[in-house]
Length: 289
Image (cartoon, rainbow, N blue to C red; front, side, top):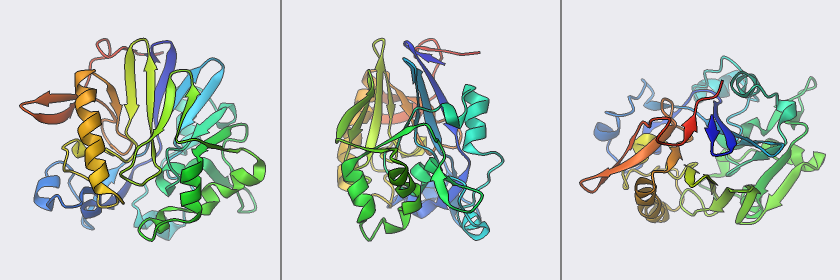
């Protein structure tokens, strides 16, 4: 698909499941279960929607999903239902191989965003999954990953970034930086102090990736905030600032964990915000071949 003069594609990794109560925090199950039906273990169905951007000779992949370094027991715990690898999905959707990716960007280093940074070689060692890419992450997120908070320690797995240091591919960035002209990463407090969101502006249009700030369409209502967030009040303030702007300016919004409709517009009706589908032409997308 074309977004202005850039090619953009959503590359889903694989479906997985997390506890519905944790995903929706203080929202009662009687409300969230109407939108996200839980399984017998109270888990809701999610995905990981990575973003491929191609322009000016660069082929960028933002996020790498959950990866394939999981034991059978771990895969069962998270309900991982993989039928093809991220690299296979990348090739099928974009026509590009993992070897052709030139830049990988992580909004943060939680295992469901950076797990696909590395893969296991024939000897069982974690090695870069994108051997010719530079890997970008903010320096503050890297520092947090190396000394995590007690509440999110389990989400950080060093095998997802330390092999990149060893190979010389990891590049630490500032709180806000430009990946390509018009493609910026910006740190927004809420899920953590150091998570970043993506903003792509081309041809007078905006695509905004909310990462874990607004992980699915169901999290668009302002008070619907994950129990995983370290700073939920700051999440609320960021949502109050960004979502009405998205509605006013007709942003195309990427919800990283939405299993069914990761790309949406935001509308505001009678003071209530909601995510809706979008028409290709009115949002500036032209379907590719």
